Each structure stands twice: as C-alpha cells, then as structure tokens.
Image 1 (cartoon, helix red, strand yellow):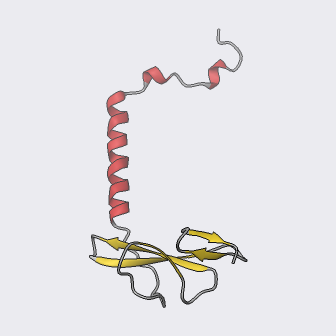
Image 2: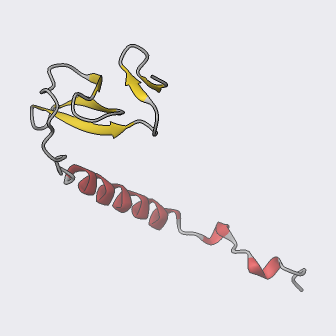
Image 3: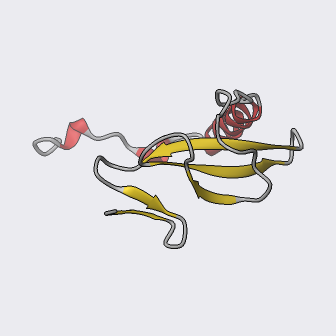
Length: 100
C-alpha cells in the first residue's frame, strides 16, 4: 500500500530514453529555426550612423543612449535604443547611467 502523498509522484524510471532524446532534438531544431527566422529590424534612428560597436550617448533624447552592433548576417550595423531611469544621463566613459 502506498504511503500518503506517494501516489502523487511519477516514476521516472519508466520514461523511454529514446523518445525523450528525440523530443529534445525536435525541440532544439524548432528553436533554432525560430531564432534564425527572427530578422525584425528596429525602427529608423535619428542618431548618427554606427561605425563601431559599443554604447553611445543619444544626441536626440535626454537620458537616452544606444548600442551599435554589427550584424554579420546582413552585413549592416544595427542600433538598439535604451533610456536611463528618470533623472539620470548616460556616461560613455563609464558606460552607465549616472546623475548629471
């Protein structure tokens, strides 16, 4: 006879290891396809064009900064905009949001 609460747990020794492996492979392939298909580009920026990777203070937004990343798949630079918390400004030397 089972002890109290013992019947609530599954016996994992009965799992088919081959089926479990195939499940992991299928899930991995699905994730790889999904990630590879993600090519959405951010909206056009009013910031200067990127010429090197890094984080830079915004010339357009107070407290704003952006990240420049080279996308080897498209052979283009991509800018990702960010905003510091209210009352802070981005410091390029510290690469952080600081009090002005």
